[in-house]
Length: 154
Image (cartoon, rainbow, N blue to C red; front, side, top):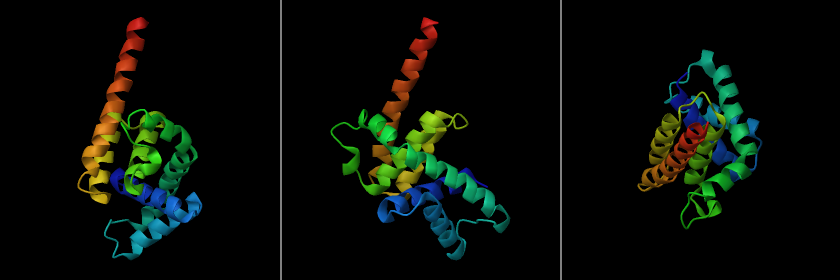
């Protein structure tokens, strides 16, 4: 399974959660079922659907459960913006990337940022990629600076 496909499904599921108020399980199942019926453009292999659903559900559930924490973190880098004023797509992309940066040790930070920019360009407006890159780039620089200071003090 390609992580890019799983990330796309996660963003779509988070969007579905916010729009419809369904559970994470329902959102993931709706999105994956729809992806499979649309001529399977994403190339989801039937033999991998179970693992794909489990992975995406875990990411979506964790992102959704931590959204208040993630939003508070994002506000620090949203110059002149509030999270609730962002487009729904940009908000979900930023939340998911922030979740990966803060809670996923198996995802290199630069990969999380790069993937978020690609997802923002794919799902968002012409400006979404630049906006997401600016916010997450600032967050990444801040986090790397703090980590460098911490290691110098040890």
